[in-house]
Amino acid sequence: MVNVNDLGTVILKGSATIGYTLDETVFDNDGLIGVNINYQWQKLTNSIWTNIAGSIAKSLTLTTALLGQQVRVLASYIDNLGSSENVASAGVTVAAQNAIVVENQKTGTTAWQIPSTSQATTEIVGYGDATSINKGQAINFKVSLAQAGQYRIDVYRLGYYGGTGGRLITSITGLNGVVQAGPTIDSNTRLVEYKWNTSYTLQTGNDWTSGLYFAKLTDSRTGRQNYIQFVLRDDNRPADIGFQDAIATAAAYNNYGGYSLYGFNSSGGQRAYQVSFDRPFQYNTSSASEQFNNTLTWEYNMTRWLESQGYDVTYYTNLDASTNPLQLYSQKTFLSVGHDEYWSMEQRNNVEQARDNGTNLAFFSANTAYWQVRFEPSTSGQANRVMTVYKDTSGIGTGAALDPIAQTNPAAATTLFRSAEVNRPENALLGVAYTGDIGSGGVYQGFDYVVSNASDPYYANTGLQNGDKLTGLVGYEWDAVLNNGFTPAGLVVLSQSPVQPQGALPPLPPGTNTTIANAVRYTAASGAKVFSTGSIQWIWGLDSAGVTNPRVDSRAQQIAVNVFLDMGVKPKTPSAGIVV
Image 1 (cartoon, one colour):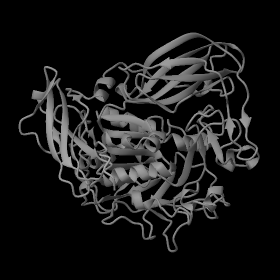
Image 2: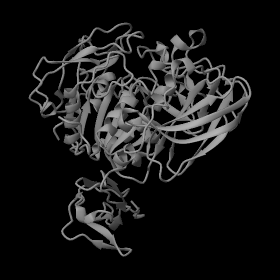
Image 3: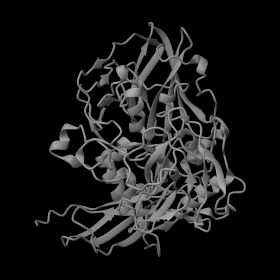
Image 4: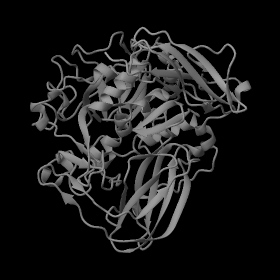
């Protein structure tokens, strides 16, 4: 092997906040197997990096003496090709409060919400030309009105904000809207694309906070409203939690223009094999088909709770997790929320590698990493604007893969991860795998979460005993332990919740008990902690804003705090009664 001496990289992770701990991850393409790495933490003094005396561990606890100063870490080692390396991380400024706490001290509003009486997707619709952007970047909005006229855009960031759930960031008024062209539809894959002109370019500021953003469109003529959603990243800021927005699952169920990846809400019952991000999302939450993919049904509640507790969170999408593997290393914990069904092979690889490099994984979700997808360019050539998912002859995973690539590269086929072609069951990563659901009419229903192994540390300070119940936290889809040979070593089962599945079940190993759902945890060989709720709606035990039959439970909140504490993540502003 020729030594080309690839330079290593050091990435900081954790909250740069007084009383918290920064950690790091070192990468080097020349290999680090068996390598001893020496660390030296430094601070910036008079524009010169100087050593912090005695700070030579892998992590650094931030004291008040470092308040307002920039810190970084140096890593020194000899890589597997014999090259001596001395690499430094980027610097980060130590603050008294994390960015999420500071953001949520600002004045919030409920005006971000759209009353159902004001909602009509045919009156005013739009989409952005990116699913996420880094702060300081711009996003192009493509907007179409049913009749030409004026409209406005109000941009909100979702969070807690004293319970209001959002904050107005900026308003743009007096915009002239037009009727844009209809879609192009591919006759073979039923791909629906709207090739609209840019209506408005939103320039974000470097002072904007990473988060889930909703641009509310209002037709001045009719008062009708709709959303364009996007994620604002902060690629240069380490944090404790990386919140992954499941935009791929949203795209899969979106049937705007006539076709989704499902027959039940596609024209003529014919599902598409490709779906585009170049089209509006449906937000009419009175329809069950939109509840499946609605950020406001699942992720909003987790965002509210995390930010109410002052967790240091940064946000990105699973498209980012697929295309930028380093995205996963700036946080201690990768977080999947709600309904996170569609992953690319690249994302699966990146998340597994992150776990194997010490990144914790928290799956407050279910039916996760179920279908394997490909991200491809739009017909106009823009990268990663089309998601390809051929599925299989049955449409539910019980038949042979339909993807043409299955003939030459079966492991890359866009079918189930657990299929014979791909053979990467999701429980190898999560510890559990999808086994059933309530059915299309049961999105806001649910079964009780039933505690097992109550002596486990994750139940500390809850008072819960074996057999105790948390009401309505299992549904509308759930996971369970599978006897398929892929269960991670040392798996701890935390619940045995009775369920009653409806409709067709996914392919399961013989003897699977389909009437039990499980929450689990395990520790990977790297030391990374992995936790799975085994339920899409478990998060409603943390926050139930907007949920039919609210089911917030302080014991569920304590469990979540315990999970994150075990991952080295603690809240800055915990609720009264929460034990940290």
